[in-house]
Image (cartoon, rainbow, N blue to C red):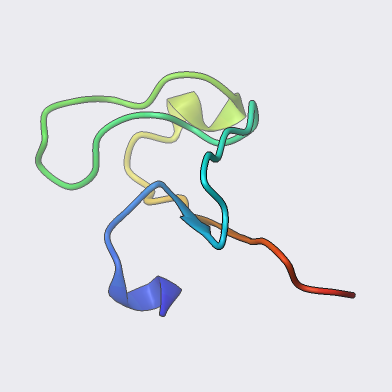
Amino acid sequence: MSEQLDYGMVGINRAAISNEVVPFGGIKQSGLEREGSRHGIEDFLDIKYTLFGGIST
């Protein structure tokens, strides 16, 4: 499923997601750059972050 979506962050079974190491900013041709984390300089990559809640390991 992750490969089919164009997103930076998505939460599954979670009401609110936030993580200081996940870049925040535009996807594709939005004209917005990413900010925050070490990925802020990697403007030409689409970093994906998927959070699954309620799964036992």
